[in-house]
Length: 373
View 1 (cartoon, helix red, strand yellow):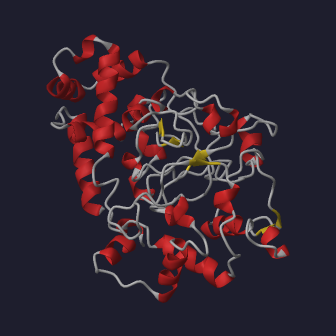
View 2 (cartoon, helix red, strand yellow; view 1 turned 60 degrees about the vertical axis):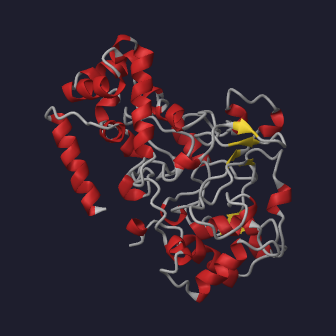
View 3 (tube, rainbow, N blue to C red; view 1 turned 45 degrees about the horizontal axis):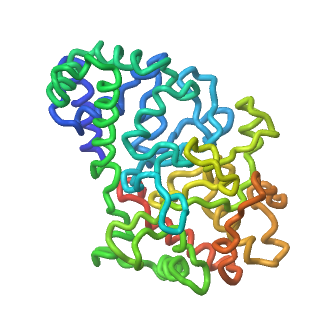
C-alpha cells in the first residue's frame, strides 16, 4: 500500500506538471483522484471510494458515515456508499433464465456496467454536482496532460464530440477500476485456499456455518461460484432481495426527504416497472465487509455483528433476538414490508452467540491484506 501511495503521488504530480499518462489505466487513475471534475473542485471519485479505507467514504458528517456528503458540503445522499472494491466482477444488468434481475452497478443496478457507473457521480447534483457532460470535458481540457493522453489513447478527434470524450473518460476510469488495486484477492481466506494461512478454530467454524445448507445458507446469495472454496470468489451472486431493512430515519431528517419517504430500491431503476421489485437491493460483496461499515443500503447498522443478529431474528424465537443491540429497542419495521425474501431469510435454526461470533470471525478473513491492521 505504501508503494502504491508513492506511485500515486508521482502520477498526480507529473500529470499536474504536464506529463501525460500513457495507458488507459494510468489516465483513469489520474482522473479517479482528480477533484477538479466536481463543481467546486473539492471531490473526486476517491473521496467517496478511498483506496486507503476499503474503497468506501471515510468522512464523517451529521449522519455519521451512513451516507456521503456532496461537493457542495451541504447535500447528503440517501444510500450508503458501496465499496468499489471487486465491483468490476458484477455482470451487466440483466434478467436470468428464471426472470430474476442480476448485476449492474449501484445498489439498484441502474448502471449497466462499470463504465456506465463511472459517468454517474460527476453529474449527480448531490454528489460531484457538475451541470452537464460538456462542463466536465471542459475541465478535462484545462489540463494539457489530459488532452495529450486522451488524443493518444482515443484519437486526435476525441474532443470534437462531447459524448465521445465523455465515453473516453468513463472508459479510462473503468480500466483503472479493473486493476488489481481494487481486487487483489489476497485476504486470509485466499491465502487459506493457497495453503498459506491456517484458519483459527473460530474462523473455521464460521466458514463451515457460512457454507452450510443446514445452519445458515449464507451462500445462497453470497456465493458466486457453483461450489465453495474456489479461487477468486466475490461472495455475492449479484441478485436482488428485500431483507426487511428498516429506514434510516436519522438520515431522512437530515437530507430533507422526510420520514415518509420510501427508498424503492430496484424499482427505482428506470428499466424496472414491476412493483414486486420494490425494496430489493443488490446483494453486496462480502469482500472487505469487516472494514466497510456502516451496513445495509442506508447505513442503518454500525456493527457487523448487528447485521448477523438482524438476520438471526428471522430464525429465532428468543425475546432477546427481537432487540437491536445498537439501540436497545426492538428492530424497526421494514421500510418496504412487501416482497420480503423469506425463503432465503428463514434458512435454519437460530444461532447462539458462539456461532454468531464465528460467522463474524470468518467474514473478517475476507479483508484484503492491506486493511488487516
